[in-house]
Length: 53
Length: 262
Image (tube, rainbow over all chains, first blue to last red; front, side):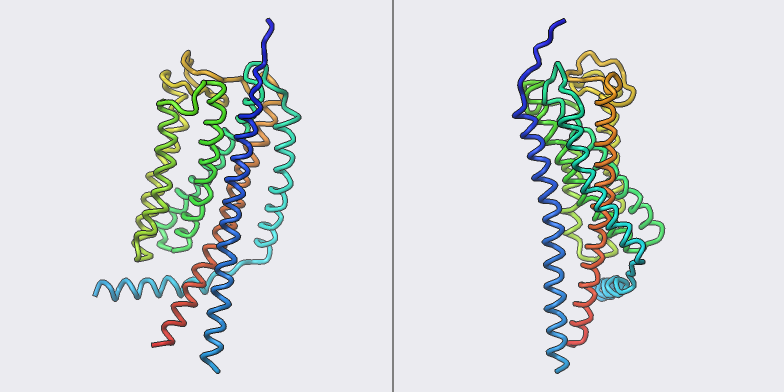
C-alpha cells in the first residue's frame, strides 16, 4: 500500500526548539541563582571584615 | 510566644546548614555524571534525527515522541524523588529532605513543561489541534498546575518546619496526579491519546499511535531518550540540591551576622 508521508518538519523543529529553550532557561536559572548567592556571600564577608576592623 | 518559638526553630534550622559536608568522591561522581549527561545528549539527538527512520504515516512529527514520552519519564523520576524526600522528612524531620523535595520539583516541572509543549506541537499536525478536552491532556494540565502551586504555596509559609511538613504531605499527595496521567490512556477508551509503551486496553479512539517494538531503531532511540531524561532528572536534581544547601548556608551566615548586630 502506498503511503504519502506528510511534510510537517516545522512542528518537529518547533517542539525541539521549545525543549532546548525550556531546558536552557532551567540551567540558566540555576547558574544565575548560584552566582547571586556567591555575590551575597562575598558581600556578607566584606561586611563582617569591615565590622572587625 | 509562638513567634519566638518560630524564630528559634528558624535559627536551629539555619545552624544545621553548617553541618553540610560533601565527600570528594560524591563531587567527582556528580561531575562525571554531568559530563556523561551532556555528551550523551548529542547521541540522543543524533539517534532521534538520523538513526531512527522517518515514520511513513506521521512524518517528522513522530520524532517529537522521543522527547515527549521521555521528558514525562524524567519528570516522573523527579516527582518520585519528591515523594521519597517527603516520606523521609516526615519520618526523620531532617530539613535536608525538604531541600531535596523542593529541588526535585524545580527540576520535574520544566521537564513536564517540555512534555506538554512537545505534545501540543505533535498534536497540531496529527490531531489537527494544539489542544483538546481529553482526560489525558486535562489530567496533565492539572498535574502541571499542582506542582506549580507547590512552589508558590511553599513560598507563602515562613516557618521552615511548617513549610517542610506541608511540602512533604503535598508532594506525596500530588504524585497521585502523575500516576493518574500515566494510567488514564491505559485503562480508558474515551481518550485520543495513544499508548506507545507498555500494555493498554484496546482503544479505537486513540489516534497517532505507533508500535515501538516493530522497528528496533525506534525502540533503541526511545530507550536511549528515556535513559537520558531520567539521568538528566537525577543530575539536575543533584545540582539543584547543592544549590539549595548553599542557600541554606548563606541564610545561616546571615542569621549569625544579624545575631552579632544585636
